[in-house]
Image 1: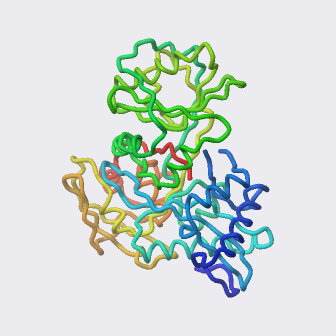
Image 2: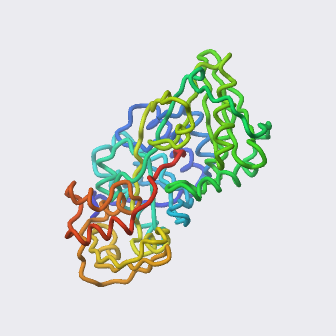
Image 3: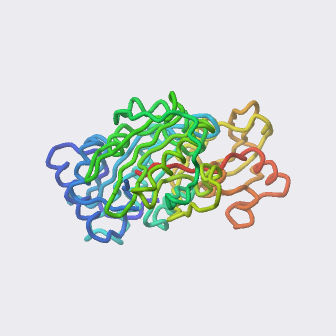
Length: 42
Length: 360
């Protein structure tokens, strides 16, 4: 039941560069109204 | 729910560690990511492995393109390959997660009370300042978890986040000799005391919990804490002065029907056999007829039977946790079954209301 038809990859992070990319992405998602987010709360 | 600032997001990432994150690339473009928190969740006195899902984020240019659902499906297939029975999350976009097979399964409620209205003066236990150490608190937290459906064996990162000092210092106190604890911060400008963690294991600890808070009334106007939607602690108050500030419902996804049902605990008098049929569009092994046999508080699941109770994988989540009974789910159109089957399912899945005080 896959919903996108373009080639994609889902996997763990493999380098410090990818870690920085994910951090930047999540920082952007959680500092602007995101379409999709799961709560991180205190 | 509070959203994290960027610096806290980075600290959260660092605490969880790179290995717990997954990326989703479309071509060579990073389109999304999420975090996996392996834990255990308590169900009728038994711990069931559960992976909490956190930090689901999709790059703006990929939103609305199916990336989020596909990423969630890939994550579920990964967990299924690892034999993880359950996964849970707090959703800001419930429709997405429902499409992935999640459903509302338990509550988390923020409460508030004016300190002057607590009016509990009896303090049967000593209150002792203790260091902010997870190891010290975890033993009591775990005792509390075993007695409450939906509670967690917390991921180490959750302990670190909970006990991290931010703007205001944190204070920790133990009630008696291991009968409970409270961890809180004070926001004196607002006259607010925020409880960030607590455990109350005995009636004496409950009395002490309230009297300790009441004794802050000269400096603190209000106390906030997280608990169940129907908070048992508030039964100890002389009047109904505690008010809910918000009620969230966290969502659960059954990843492996057989192990989820076999690892859960059941009431000791809930003996019986239930035949059911599950639909799951993603995980083929869940798409089958099953026979659940319960005795002495435990269950065995075999494939086959007459499939008297029909439901999809989403409907199984609130039944599993007893957030909603089988009879109620039938009235809501979530499952199908004859009267006898529904009554049997009500008995077998009966449990205390599911809740947790943790966010992730």
